[in-house]
Amino acid sequence: MYALWNTYSVPPKAEFPIDVERWLREQSTALWPAALGSLSLRHSPCVRENCPACLRGEGHPSSILYCRIKGRRVGIYIPQELVPEIGRCLENGRALQELLYEAAQRYANAVKHQRTQKAKK
View (cartoon, helix red, strand yellow):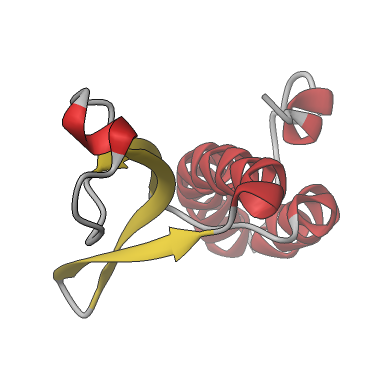
C-alpha cells in the first residue's frame, strides 16, 4: 500500500487549524490520482456460438471497477493494461481516506486548542 501519509510520526501537542491544513496539503500531494471503489476480475460468457472457453465454463476474463456515483453502484470496464494504474489509484484513495480520518481528529483538537488560546487572552 502506498503509505506516504504515514511519514508524520506523532502530531505536535498543540496545533492550530492552519497547521493541520498545511500538514494535510503536504501529505495528500503525493496521493494523486486517488479514488474509492473496488477492482474485480470476472469471467463472463461471450456472444459467440460454440465458443470453446464458454463451453468449458471458463468464460472470458475482464476487470471491472465498481464505484458509487450519486449513491448508485456503477461498474466500469477496465482494459487489462490499465489494471495496475487503476489499482494504484485505489490504493491512494484508501491512503487518502485514512489521512482524512487522522485530519478530522487533529483538526478537532486544533480548534479546541485555538479556542483555549483565545479564552486566555
